[in-house]
Image (cartoon, helix red, strand yellow):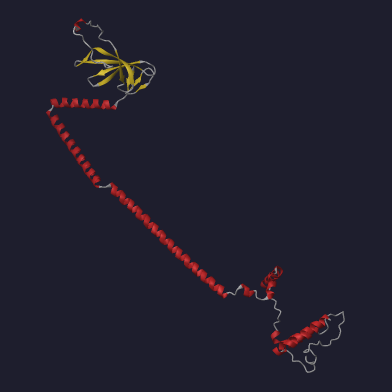
Length: 340
């Protein structure tokens, strides 16, 4: 099976290339080629920027009557991407570059200017050394000094690199991490120690408070013992509590009014006279009430009742413990007489 793309053509045995007619083409004929912009340029018609490396379908031709050391010079025609104006530039084999010819301006290139300046200085120096041997010696001394300075700088850079190479940055970072971890651990231990101290102090205070409360509970009587009397129930009445508060406020402001007179200790109790009847003769021990005259309704208290009461109180205070029953009977008889 034959190949699809054949490169070698078949020439018959009777082929004669001299019989092929030659085409007479003009020397300034143009070819369509694909190229990229060799430098940055700006269109003069519309001001569009065309950057280096932009692709174009250009027309190529050979420049007539221009050669550089037998090398032909080519011209290229491109169109602006915005206004379709024609731009031309050609090759510059002398400077191994391209030269702008028509339709655009080349942008500033510092690198090219620097290279041209260096070449110019080199040519001037060669011309001076060609005719002046002293200039050659001076240039050599300058070059040697410059070379020594460059070597010294290079040696310093090498020493600096060796110093930096001797330092292990990973070990430094590891040491720093270890130091940070140690500091964190110490801070944590200090915090724990402080917490323990605070807990101990709080426990001690709590124990002291509990011991104080226990001692107070032991010293103070229980509430049940305080309310052991049956008459204490009356103190729970709100009206009685209100009255008690009023009396307490009055006593704080004015003073306490004692029911006992200040001269009570100076009163001498009179001894019972012989003329008065004894309680046995009156029959009080037997539980009988003594005879008393009837009272008038106009006067509820007979004259001299207060004196009788005082005498009875004083006599009851003076009576020994053996006559307690007789005093109770007298009180009962007195109440019966009052009810009558």
